[in-house]
Image (tube, rainbow, N blue to C red):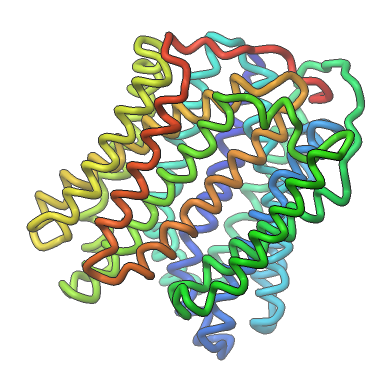
Length: 445
């Protein structure tokens, strides 16, 4: 195993996760200094989200053709440069434009973080590497609000973007030193029409879902219908294309498709629950931001501790049982928050429920990511990595839209049902001990 593969993969994933959480803390100060209105401020998040979700699969296919080390290097360098530009931005328009650029570079780097693990890790160490990466993401997401608060209080909102620059330089240096194995393979032509249809469909879908909390489901129907139409045209085009943007070998892989659906439903349930519970704690129960974060701290702790435990369970019990247990824990956690005292009124009940959420999501993440990466058809590690990251971007947006659309009293029951939908794809995973098909990925040099 190349010793730099895991540090590069984990550090790049942490950079993206940390950037998303610290921004939430920086937005109020950004709004005051730049005299931005609410819609402009929202676009600093939505613009990034739309760009990254639209381009992830395309970026993965580019990596499959030209090499994941190259795309990761370009992505992390561009991400750092865009961050520096935002830190120097004179107005909110510049911030929005550069956030879109940052999302595009984020899409370029993310599939490579998984593909490099596939290329560089022996089969018996891949699960452990994925568990470490999952725990690192949990640490970054949990530490984001605290780090953001410290930086904004001490140096202002621009500091949360300046901090990305030295981190990006460090990751770029490690990436340059990384030497993944060269695998000879057939060059894969990128279907530009399919790529455009996929990017457009995902962009419209994510934008429509992101707008639901503000304008409701009714006013979002036209955009959702347009997204459905674009994706339907994509399906027709893919059936006729010589080399579809979503490779046929990937679409026909039962472990990969089941894992992607599982990630979508589980991330929707988790992030929708966090959205709903955070508002309940701060608006209804008048708990401060720090107190609200403290009550949900067991979630981060159990994600970090649960990732290696999930990897051991995966090796012992197999993907089906481990993922099914994760879905059960996730649903139990959402149900606990919906019950008496679980919504924040009783800190102990809230802590137990959030711990169940963290343990359940860790089991799902480690199992589904292992299946997506380890069982990816040869030559398509970047494509499946892009699909995995797409599910992890669309899922939270769907969950927040579901929570906002269901109202204060119906949000958690609706999210519990949404998370429970993951039981079907979990049952479709292999039942034996985890042994991914570690065929070498073509074009990954």
